[in-house]
Length: 247
Image 1 (spheres, rainbow, N blue to C red):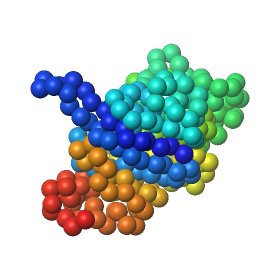
Image 2 (spheres, one colour; image 1 turned 90 degrees about the vertical axis):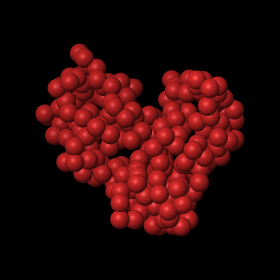
Image 3 (cartoon, helix red, strand yellow; image 1 turned 90 degrees about the horizontal axis):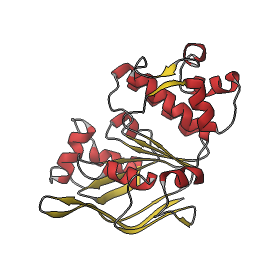
């Protein structure tokens, strides 16, 4: 279980301190698929970085399975069982996919065992296992390889920051299938930052953030109809907070 208690985050701006996250309280229960959405600039990605330890809150506490992790580093949180996937996956020149999966699993997996993780994300293992994690891979391929490393780690909390960013439609459709399989098989919680309707539609719960605060939270079937109209989810979110839709 992940719990945020009265968490705030400020940055230095031209006119003084700017509050990005405001006194936020949030609980992510075990074995839940949760999507955080809302208008652009509302603090979604900042929240993901606070959970992963990339940023530290200026106020409040963060607990993971009852342990205060507020001041812990990214590495310490990773060792406790929190995985983080970036909007743009990191490329590693000279490192093969097999090496990356072995590093994630923290053991010397056989090629056959590593290939199972690639198969889970819809990649033909023999075509990828010995490839370098570099510019020869497309955005969609990198996303799926990154998810394979998350599966190999087997962590209790997997955080994905806008996984749809920078990939084409075909890759996005495959990405949805990967998350659906991950949702069925994972023993941990999945937290995704996204405003894509198809990702929202496979969530157990949706959390809506605007101006650094949680404005709505609940089961998908309760929250999603309030957000979606004839436009895209992100446009609907914008209208939702401009008074154009009923809460």
